[in-house]
Length: 116
Image (cartoon, rainbow, N blue to C red; front, side, top):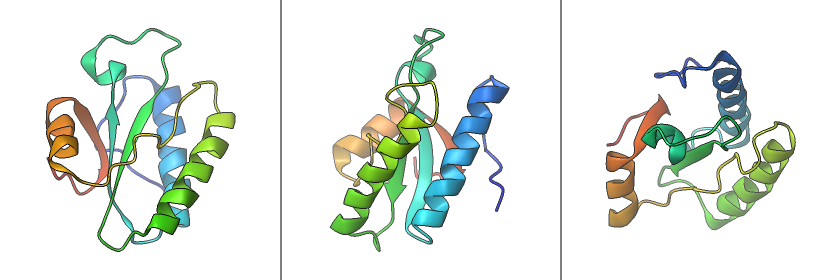
């Protein structure tokens, strides 16, 4: 199912990479992901043309430790599919007060339910 991003990264190529990655993650974890955000240098306006994409994935309460391990493996595969080293869900978010504050202060909502 095609994903419609709530916000654009301002670059059609990056938007397409993020959309495709979210579609893959949605298929791998049906009903287990609550929301997706971009964090890091791209949101802060400090990125360079070769900067990576930091995709934060907020899993809902039905996600398990096995899901996290699978997400780590999937992240590695997604990293190999695009030119932005470090892209993926290495910033998976198991909600803690610190993670929530970080999302509120330095993130761009992309898809799902915006919990900020």
